[in-house]
Length: 158
Image: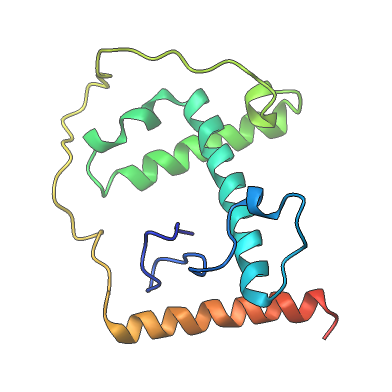
């Protein structure tokens, strides 16, 4: 899931450009009029949900505010551990306010960088290499088209 600033290529699934996208664009207006608008509407809804989940995770796990100090190879493990613990807490305590998104408190911020006592430093990694070739763009565009068409067909009972 990516916003419209990213290219449509392997690893990035942006909305269609030139179509309504933000949920506010759909308020008090007709429902999506075509498969591209429907895709953008659902893409926007899903991105908002993902952003809300990350906000809750960051409220609970302060380490997520300081991820750049860790090697890119270590970051996925830290994120997975935080997500796993967060979900464990949510299943064990269904009234957990952070898990349910009902806590209104903003996390405290500090001027000082967090020190976690490790020797990791952010640095170059081979994990961040993407294929921006035209072939990769066509492949992802076709993939997005298939998703959008299937959504539209399902919505209209085809």
